[in-house]
Amino acid sequence: MTLNLSNIPNGQGFRCDKTTASYFGDAADVAAGTDNGIGWLGFPVAHNPDVPGCALPMRSRITSLLHSPIPMLPHLTPVHVLSHDTGLSVWCFLVDLGPSSGLGAIEGTQGRGIDLTEGALTALGLTKAKGLYAVSYRVIPVNANPLALLTT
Image 1 (cartoon, rainbow, N blue to C red):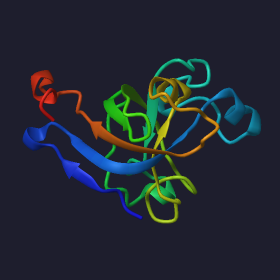
Image 2: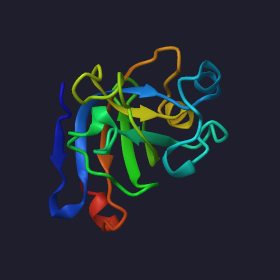
Image 3: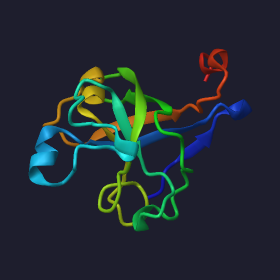
């Protein structure tokens, strides 16, 4: 599966119109050893469960992400996520790389195109029990014109 990415006009970022999301970084992930609870560049995801954050499969040296269509983006880049299940949306901060090996939407990664923190799930009206979620998202560059965002 590949990510269905579209550029937003005038350099205002890109969007993914439909992908599958999973969640990451909560205390249960840390206890199970599947996540260390600390995001890319040291953001303490597990200690900030109310912060809406996300992880994108950005091109990096991680084997499963070498050919990702998503370039490396600055830490805390704003990402607008929309739940197809609830119709709710939330602005998240980019806090981690992923989904990675076995999780993402790049080759061999089972079709997931974004990971969400517990805070993002709560804001979207979703529960961890479901595990996978249909979402769309927009990545907004930190230098974007805020007025242009209102029309995309």
